[in-house]
Amino acid sequence: MKGIDVIKDWVGALTELGLMLLGLAIVLALLVGSNLPFFGSVTANIMAWVKDMGSNGLVGLITLGIILWIFSNRKMA
Image 1 (cartoon, rainbow, N blue to C red):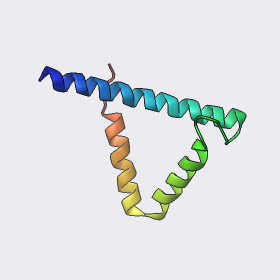
Image 2 (cartoon, helix red, strand yellow):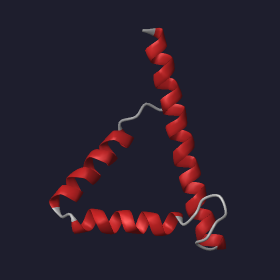
Image 3 (cartoon, rainbow, N blue to C red):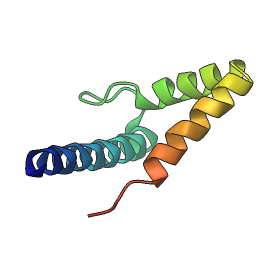
Image 4 (tube, rainbow, N blue to C red):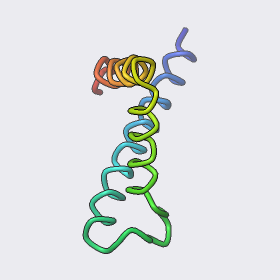
């Protein structure tokens, strides 16, 4: 069981890192412009994702709710 806990810790740490990099990419895209060398067009991808969720109606709303629930129920180490 200790191995599973180690894997869960790694996945949690990688998720935290990914969310931090996403936040950094959004801020840099707003400050510098939409075409960042290493982050690509993050804001355009997020806007396309939100538009896609909105066009799917109730299914998109349920999916967004599940994603938010997953991220809000994480344990902060």
